[in-house]
Length: 134
Image (tube, rainbow, N blue to C red):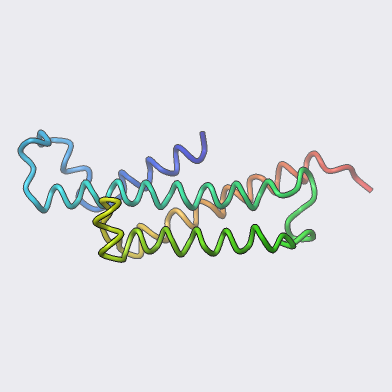
């Protein structure tokens, strides 16, 4: 539920999204349609950030990532590839056309990354609670 909340928060915080709610979509201007696409793109980026956080956080059941690190080379390569592909979908015109995405401002990129870090910290707190003491 935390990832879903992060995705929706990111969507609704895109500049102009709130204004679209008072206008039927059939009456949107080209600029308003672009705002809607930016909102969906921000949701997508938040979903990617959340999934990456989940992939990293669940590499261990109770051991902290701060002591375990990220030793899985294949996972690390996949993470880099996924981030690169997602950013290409957001910023590279050919992929924007294929995936119907639009460029985002730095705030719409940074917010999901920050929320993903919060998800990781929550998971680290859970691990600290369930970790055997000793």
